[in-house]
Figure 1 (cartoon, rainbow, N blue to C red):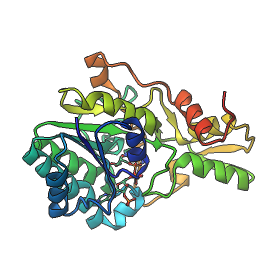
Figure 2 (figure 1 turned 90 degrees about the vertical axis):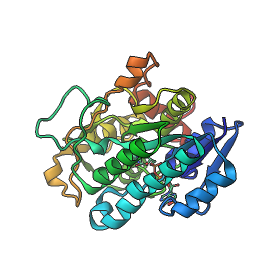
Figure 3 (figure 1 turned 135 degrees about the vertical axis):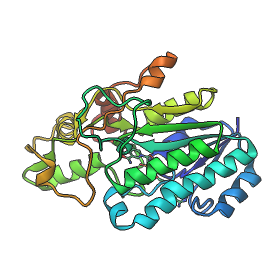
Length: 291
Ligand SMILES: NC(=O)c1ccc[n+]([C@@H]2O[C@H](COP(=O)([O-])OP(=O)(O)OC[C@H]3O[C@@H](n4cnc5c(N)ncnc54)[C@H](OP(=O)(O)O)[C@@H]3O)[C@@H](O)[C@H]2O)c1
């Protein structure tokens, strides 16, 4: 199957390219395909005639989405629409990558994870624009897979954020006497290599619809920081704080755990724990010694 990846040099795109290495792969960066332009997307799909497309392209700076709303909707919603229209035209499958931030706006804090069948209520522009993108993909491309994930970390680091949370915490822990990290936002951190492997597994199937794919287990940003620093032997104290003590432009969900319910229903094996994935990531980045 000929697979085209949009955002091939991004954090997830890089690991998708690793996973599909040696296969019939067309890795495209933004200089080769601009999702906000219908013409650019059409040109690329007509030229390469892929059988499957994985769209990782997004404007992912959550706070900047609040002040750059036009850009957020242009890339995350209209961009997804352009890709869906052109994928449908050539009869290709489309895996659209989305986010846990489509959830979290409901009044009751959940404790058992959102399933693919729960109604998303986003809290911020990033979540709203990504949800609009999902809906356009569902309406416009028949053979779609909407894949939601959360708290991504990968060796390439997020292009759109200039790195990832783990690298930022490691750097700060080496510079500062103590760290203060939010402990009232709970989610499932996810290693992009594990996510890419699962996407590769489902893209081969005809199980269309919505998928939650995250590493197993949950934690807060505070717990993720402590686990990271413990793993690399850094003793910098980490103080848990509340979101109110760390005001940001965009509101974040207090709880956005994605229960991987579709995988479970389909009998597809769950993704390993985030702690195990984190250790592999830290080894790969050279923060801890090879086993
Ligand atoms: N990062 C997270 O924690 C997280 C969590 C949940 C879900 N997600 C979703 O996962 C996906 C991948 O995220 P990531 O962390 O891999 O982000 P990333 O590293 O920023 O990758 C995004 C890629 O999309 C490209 N891109 C951006 N705007 C584009 C446009 N207008 N046209 C074509 N390409 C464009 C970027 O290229 P340039 O670098 O050249 O701009 C980059 O290669 C996104 O859909 C995101 O919403 C991310």
